[in-house]
Amino acid sequence: MKWAELKNKPKEELLHDLSETRARLVDMRFKAHAGSLKQVHLIRQAKSDASRILTRLSQLVHTDGSPHTPEVPKE
Image (cartoon, rainbow, N blue to C red; front, side, top):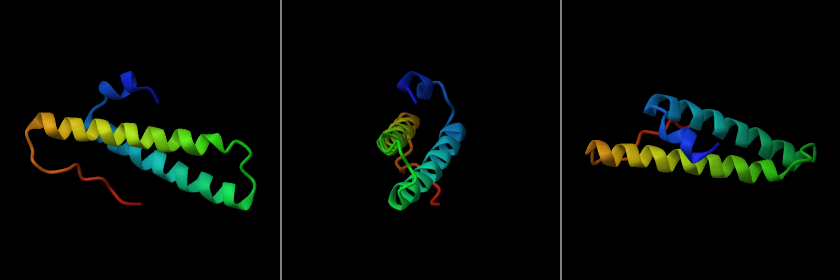
């Protein structure tokens, strides 16, 4: 996921993307541990995607003037 794609998305869509990315990351970690994931570099990419989304959410919160951190749903 590129930064330019994230800049134009609303907060709700970013939260949805974050939950999907985290779910995909958990699935890939289980597969890597079991030995069935051949492309382990995808784990690093998913982690980077999640951190980019969290960074963008943090930026949105700070530009809105709200003192609170973004509410990120836990899986």
